[in-house]
Amino acid sequence: MVMVPVMARRNQKPDCRIREDAKSIVPAGTPDWITAELIEATIRTWQPYYREVITPEEAVTMIRSVGRLFDALSSGS
Image (cartoon, rainbow, N blue to C red; front, side):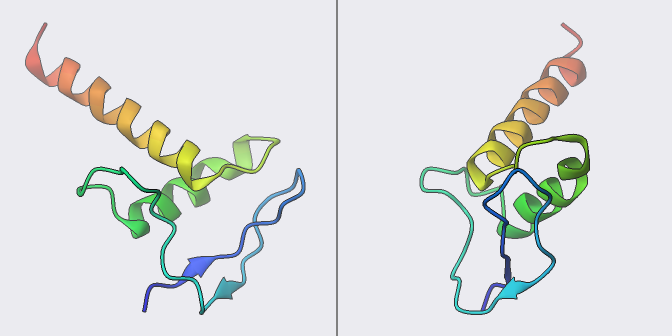
């Protein structure tokens, strides 16, 4: 079973509680290399710097953007 953090739906940081009945926070259409754990780590890392609550969809966008940046930097172009 995947443990998913319960996100506060107010303009505050996420709660630290875990919802055991949640199956996954991976949005539909997310690439296979982006795991629930990576999404959770991204939200935990970046949430302190954002006023609004970061959603899993926004975390996936952030991860994919960093992935594209890495590709561009590593290709030497």
